Image (cartoon, rainbow, N blue to C red; front, top):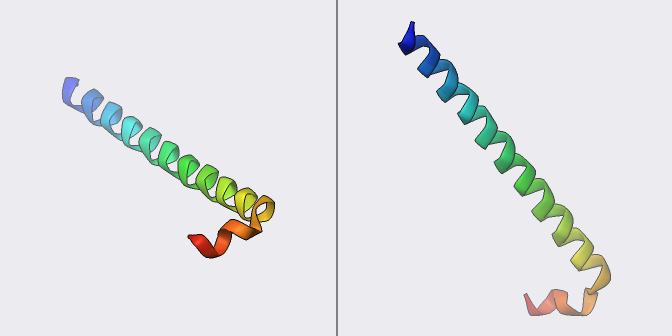
Length: 46
């Protein structure tokens, strides 16, 4: 029984980190887009 619980826990943690990573990417994308909109002059410097 203990082994199955460990598998479920590992799976739950994997899903959690996957969601955290997805959220991080979305936030990064949003931040990038707002920076581009607010600061078009800085765009060619990148």
